[in-house]
View 1 (cartoon, rainbow, N blue to C red):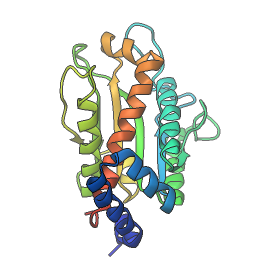
View 2: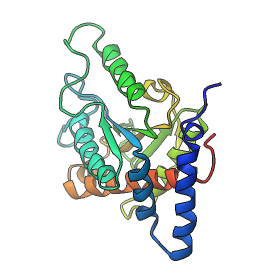
View 3: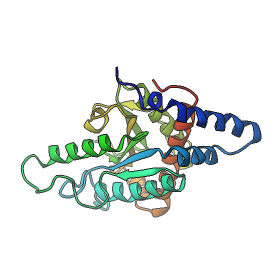
View 4: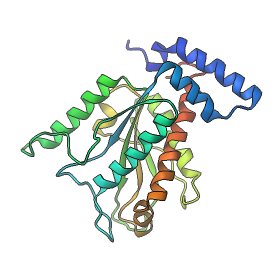
Length: 239
């Protein structure tokens, strides 16, 4: 049986658990705790900016801004947050280009396979795929996190990030993390989530997502939810 990431690193995470108990005792903030643990054991986070190149994803209802551009912007801000916390960060798509090589038949499959390869080679503590949502009913809005049904660790990570997103002042509807059958969630056994940051089919969500300030707050919030997950997992073996 393949052991989980946390099982294979349980000695290192045991040290993080000791740090956590000390932090609770002396009042050290959770962020500083996980930052110390991340630096000492060099955890890797994979950030996956969805779409790219000729695959722009969905577009804004008012401005027609491409999802792929928003995904990349938030992913870069998210990278900065994790690096500041002491993590190693791997971006699957660091530029506007796709990962498929030539834009010929089968480009989407090649693109996804390349993302899977990067994830496998990185051996990450978590995979966060950044996307924007769409829905036929324009009133639907808010951030939504997806996880693979058969992965308990991904479910726990998704719930932690969703709870953080629900606490944002801009949240008008508290969502629950949902099961999703998507390639990036199924291509590895590492804790993986898709974060749909908002609905580009909703004018209010689109307006928020077009501002640098809101993208920055999203990055901070997603990072905080991930840190809470990692701190909790350091107390015991992940499912």
